[in-house]
Length: 128
Length: 124
Image 1 (cartoon, helix red, strand yellow):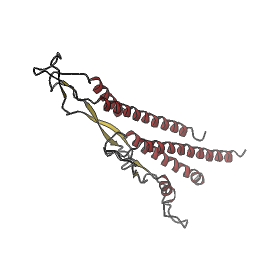
Image 2 (image 1 turned 30 degrees about the horizontal axis):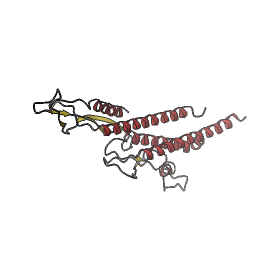
Image 3 (image 1 turned 120 degrees about the vertical axis):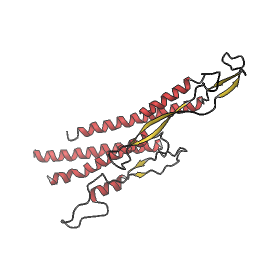
Image 4 (image 1 turned 90 degrees about the vertical axis):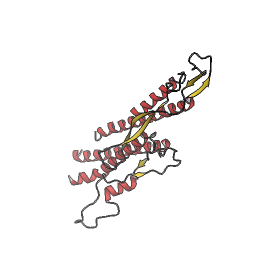
């Protein structure tokens, strides 16, 4: 069971991070007209690294406890606007739309990877 | 989206009352604007997930436009009529911006829905 878990975990973590980013970018777009709202985002690469491998901490012995594995502690950062608007809102729709589209595509890609892994498992189980 | 809908309604109200002329400065129509506020999700502390809500609708304090038209049936005893201080161009810009942002929200919603549906059928 542990082997299967490990086999699928990476894609699962990636998927949940993508989902989180989707929510955040959706929030930014929803708040495009709210004065003083600051657009936020997560750095997927570093968030994924810390969620899967514990960031800079690595396990060198089998007795070490793995520190990674949670996407709840992901750091949500603030976006630096290209040209901030006068009302203190830092949402730039073109930026958000681009990031959202990129994130949605990556989400779908991750889903396909996950599907591929599941297919692999299935064919291994069937042994046909 | 509800907030943008409220905003669209206020724009419509303002535009509808552009010609609402009054014979006294107190009763003339005052342009209204919604007040938006970010509503953070309280499920996870500092998650950055938030929606927007209208916390109120404010009437503008701008003084009405005073025009000297003694022949107007609504003119006061000095011959003045009062028109609401509505900038039609600004309202039109507001309307366009609102509809764009509404569209954006719908797009986000439909993308999220498509992704969720694909996630449900994972492994099939």
